[in-house]
Amino acid sequence: MCLQRIGGENAVAVLKAGYAQAQGDFQAAIACTLRKLGKEVPAPPCPKLQPRKQTAVKPVGR
Image (cartoon, rainbow, N blue to C red; front, top):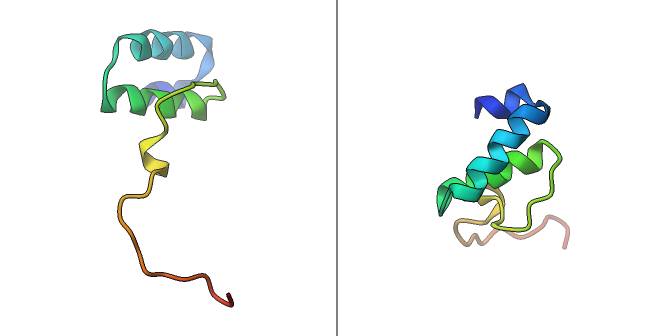
């Protein structure tokens, strides 16, 4: 998002207003951007950090 790169209080205010109106995946993406700018957002979790599929990979040496 371009507002993430701009930063500043004006960008944060616009993102917070958009977060209040957004739904679903859009709200999750805006929440992720607000977290990157250092603001606390209670929910939803960042979709980039959620696992998508199960793997059979084991830690090395354990």
